Image (cartoon, rainbow, N blue to C red; front, side, top):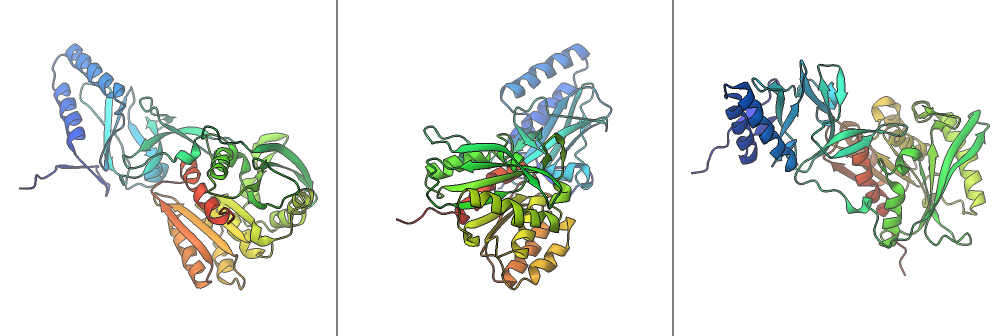
Length: 405
């Protein structure tokens, strides 16, 4: 007879955590500890058991597709907020903890896809957001430099080795924080340029322009420089030039202008096509060939990549669109639907856990209607740099395959 597995559901949610062997063992042991009448003996047993979980990196405890979140500390309420419940905005998965009787331990259970990777924090007493002090895994996210979140790694998710430096891989050169005074925008813009290993000014290269360039370059966010070095070294892509535009004000880098610049901004498109691209490509002596030029971005930058490419397919022959914020400017659908000359290549990615999936799938249908050449991929992640870092290599490999001998 097949053994029935007990199921523990979170109140008022649709997701349930199956109490597999490891989770069942821990919850049984915690219930035993809670039943100890002596405060001193109860706390002694709890400390010993807690330390064993810490020593085995079992907080949070992941078992198949289920998770037991655990926290110790003083609070009137403990909740887990993250990609899985849209940082508290999705009310059907509150993940509010239950306090173990007579202790300072709180717990909550949930179920996620076994190959998911998710960002989260712990919310104490509905006021204080903290990292999970028992979880060593962190993922940086955020605009303008980022801040860490705790990272939930489900058992079938594995870090992509392409994001770690390969011993012996030659490094490209990076020219940082170049200033351009824009007449179109009326202020200065910063950008950086990546030159591939062995770069020769006399040779011709494809070129990729990235929005949110500071974040793509940041080792704890996009880590793009390492990814480029690795892909070129492994001959997965041909050597290319990369321009990374920084939306921060040069003299006040806490002022990030991305929400204005990347919101289907016609003036910002003119800055790119009339000032930035001519300055860079004349200096690098690159041919005016849209088939060798890509625009790539994430979130608002993904919206912009679609807007740039469908507005000026004569300039941009490729568009890399990661977790696009199409919801911010629904007019993007009309623009792409009415395009008579769609870009040569599109790569569209989204996470499936409170990311941009609905808008991305709607746009995918338009790409099919427009007979675009495109790739589409989904990952079981949220709206996070962990997601975008894991998928940028797929975009680069699709756009810039190695040249045939």
